[in-house]
Image (cartoon, rainbow, N blue to C red; front, side, top):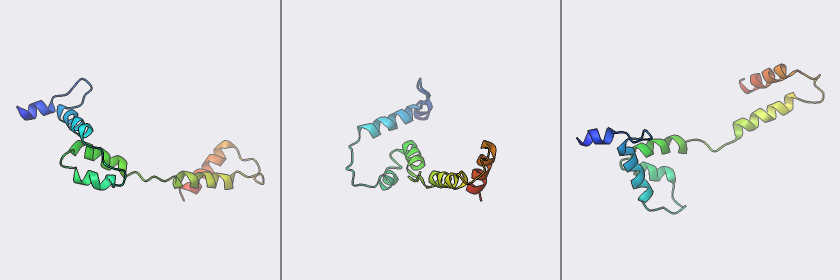
Length: 101
């Protein structure tokens, strides 16, 4: 009976277990800004298993703009006044090739 109730879905498609997990998380105390969120989520993975999966997925994204900066830098080197006005397709292909070498 308990498993059946946990698998029952709400109007927005979330299971009751996820709703209860989210409510427990939101009611919890806020930590100071001096803690590591990744370590905190590792400690709480048994308490909030579904939210832990989301945190692991989105906290692991590197906060870097290096890949996009590389592409803009390459584009700046390809599109110059000295180059004999390449068309859009040629320019796109040159940037693509430079980024994927």
